[in-house]
Length: 457
Picture 1 (cartoon, rainbow, N blue to C red):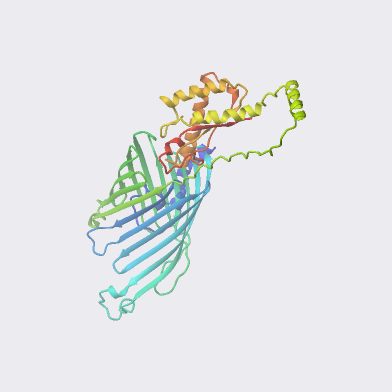
Picture 2 (cartoon, rainbow, N blue to C red):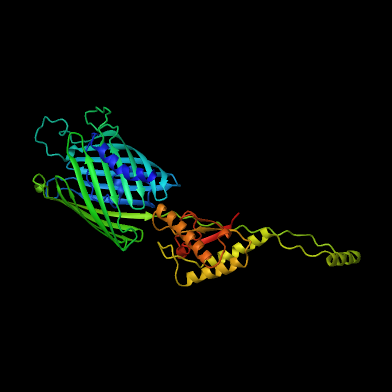
């Protein structure tokens, strides 16, 4: 049932978009690299990140709009996330500034997909720089006053999104309930939403060359229904080249690069249709930064050493102690104590079982360590253990969760293959990147791509 919901949602939201009215927002071309541009619900889908976009629109036209946008979001635990979007647009003597604070709630519907529900509350201020105007009519009170006038407005939006390892599909409703800034002082609330629906899917996920098509529909009240698509090709997860088309307008081009935590991108669109050929081209640049949260593993608590006061024994006590020692045989260690002793030994070996990034199989020296693990377990046939898979913080939470499970399952199968009884391994589980064994910001980050052992029942 969950799988059906995942694949039906894109169809449902495309149908919904046809029946809802909207206002038109400024167009950006880099939404495939920063989905928060389209949908506030995307917050928390990736590591903490911030992206700055600058767009110079319709170059060649006098007083053409120039737009600056900042998008930032971060996850708060497993389910919550916060987002911030700030827009500034300048067109002639008019400047519009908008800030939106967003919240997203996430829940899992399958091992590879989550549903995000988001809401945003915004404030808009329009500023009319009358002092910069060239006044042709001296009776125009609005412009002929040599002063800067401002007007404020309220805005809100809602979004829903399915975010999976390969699939992204969502619907966002902008201007759900808002007022437009009005210099006359009249700010009536109204409902004039704009609906964006979007679907994308990654083919060849995890390969050196990934192909990711995007389909986007923008519906505007009393205006056009704009459909656009872009096909992105990702090379070795570092270079992105994209090309697309926007209906009733023209072509779109995209070039992006990712180096470490830094993202850079350039995009353009060029009007080719009859109504857009005089608009020239628009250019856009993007600078982004991402940072994954890490948590240092707590140091193991040292067991307190009991200090017994020294008492000088008497001769009679020494004789009695010798007699008791001869009569009483030493007790055999309890099985529970044996179990506790073997876990540190297993983990000491497991510390050298390092997986390659995005891999759930072993080769070379790390694989030989599995032989040592199997030999130790076969020498202790009464021990029941759990295997826990770990990852570093590269990639999404969903990918790392699945990767950690695959790693623990792989090691379990290798141990059984080497003669360990299956009933001695109670569980294979994964914790993703949530419980790092080493600081992910240090040179030891790769040692988090491993497994650990704990006592089973």
